[in-house]
Image (tube, rainbow, N blue to C red; front, side):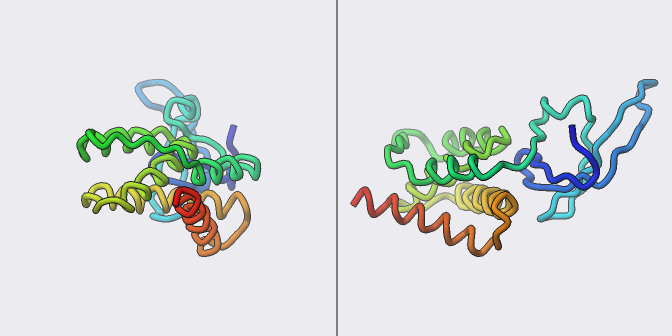
Length: 167
């Protein structure tokens, strides 16, 4: 599925590059592994090639999918349960980030930005907001071949348009 040099997304860690493919024997069984370096942290991850779907390893999004991400960010009918405790919301959002779906990460970012308009986020929520922003910015910048700073501005413009539309 992937070859050396390919960019891929590893859930909750972000975009990385497949640096090599290794064959290892584990418990008497031969297995091919993708050796991936996460771009933002230089963390090295080994993923069994037979297990890529289970762990959520995927290709970076294309232009059409970028458009869908921006439509999620711009979406106005957000339903954030005010009765839900921040730690329950945190767990739900963390599950979305770990899913590896760029769309779910976009929802988390959008929802946390909306909550931040009304009240102060907890430390964990602020950290998650930064994580979601970083994951989105890196992947979209690579998908659109744009500077990360410009992508961040585009994201902020989309969120600003959302708030203005509501007001």
